Length: 45
Image 1 (tube, rainbow, N blue to C red):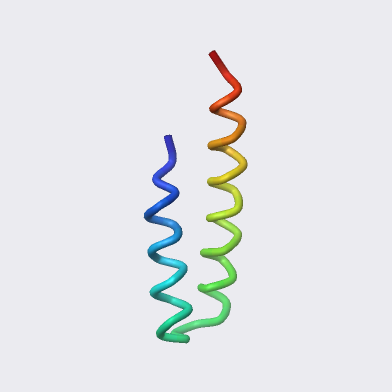
Image 2: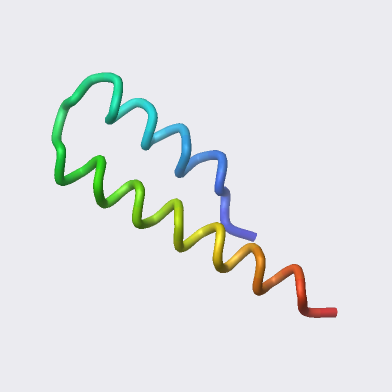
């Protein structure tokens, strides 16, 4: 299971600090990917 909370945490940290827009965008993409993987994994027995 992917640590979705870790992705969200990193996303919020990057967003709050406005450290790097590209990094924040990447974190968002990683978070969305984690959600998809989590949903797909949940459908498996």
